[in-house]
Image: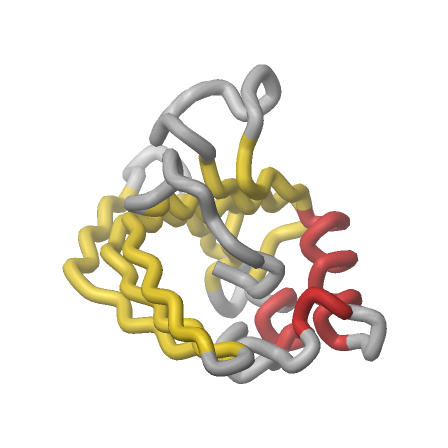
Length: 141
């Protein structure tokens, strides 16, 4: 959905208590104490999607064309709650203004069962290159 810029549909997958985190430099630390590439709660996700959907997203003019492939999915069910943890590998290709970027990452999701589906409580994207200089990451990882 994010690759197709279907941001309203993508946001509906998230819990209002959600956290979207892309660590910087280290793969795991307290994001409230250290710099992160992205550390958004649900309200900031809504703002990010609003900007990307509007004509005022200058950093995405023209918009990035994205294609991601997910694989090596590992799912663990927490028997004591209605939550599921999923881990996967991701390769994301971005093309914008004649330049191509390839990002590799490990992704960790926490999902909670709702009445009729699952809602994302958290998404952590651990970029392989999170300790290297990065370009414009205004799109959704």
